[in-house]
Amino acid sequence: MHCYVYASQRKPDSYLWLRERDDFACIPAPLALMLGDLRLALEVELTGQRKLPHEDPQVVLHHLETQGWHLQLPPKETLASANHPEYKSKPHDDQ
Image (cartoon, rainbow, N blue to C red):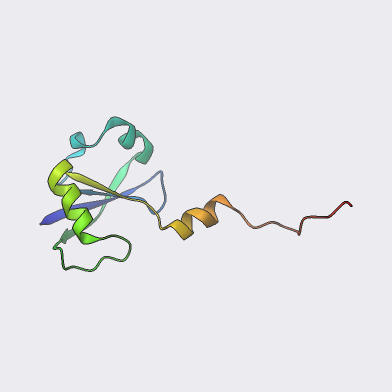
């Protein structure tokens, strides 16, 4: 299946896969609001055998076929590090 991958300008490392180019009408309004502006990042011929770095191609194809879109979020380790910035110093034990 030929599909189109858009990068979110609001959510780093978040991508929206679409079955039809620029078919943003198929995505739910809250999702569109969360992702913000999108820019075309990639056109790709996707098959169930194609290897993807962070996604299962069978799942992506299923979502594209059933709902017309697939949301790819950042890997969990990226989310974890974004949510827990490094401490500048070790916690102090006041006891």
